[in-house]
Length: 92
Image (cartoon, rainbow, N blue to C red; front, side, top):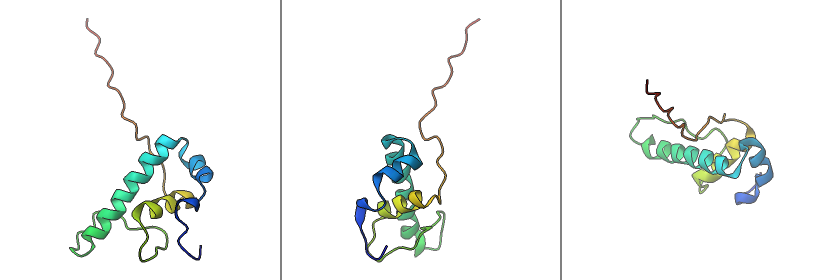
């Protein structure tokens, strides 16, 4: 990738193959983008609670674009992000 191509690169079809559904892809990418944003915010403070970008980045690249490229490269693993409903207790 020689220049920033935006959402068209990586292709959405490849991203959907990695995530399984549009809903999962949105949750997955948004969560990772927030982590990247927090990493850059904390970089000056020396806290480093979050892992920085796992791919090469460009100066004005948005965290969401970085997250989508990480997903496409297979550098992240998807965990079940949907909330699990608690089982109803059985009254005896």
